[in-house]
Length: 175
Image (cartoon, rainbow, N blue to C red; front, side):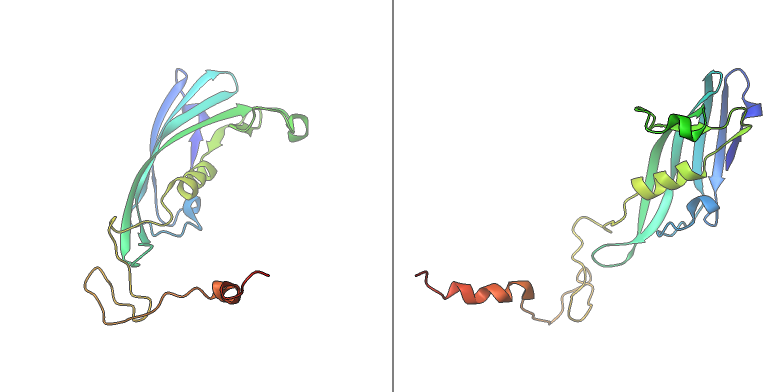
């Protein structure tokens, strides 16, 4: 998905993109995307060679609850702000301070690619380990019973084998 810079009129342009679940912009994203995501952008051109892209990425994804594994809907509305700047060759701008928030583009570029920014927003800003509800009880580790539906008859002793090596130290008296 890209912004055609020739369409910017008067230093400003707005566009709405619908990102389909099979789009290359979301390849590798693990939660299921049941319906197209919406990317609203506004592109401003405050000076020659500088483009400020603002907007939001919104939609809903489905991921398993981290306790009971039921599909959980995760709505989101993530703000977007990216500065694209026509620049020098990569070798000339290496290690310059303050350049972390700038995406460098070639001089005379005709369009701005947004796939990488959308992918970064999804991967970094959506909940990776959601809960279906705050009081989710999860599943029994012995039989797999969903404890939100009802209890089970399993009894088990919580034991952490990592402490076994230290148990012998409890009974020894210091000399």
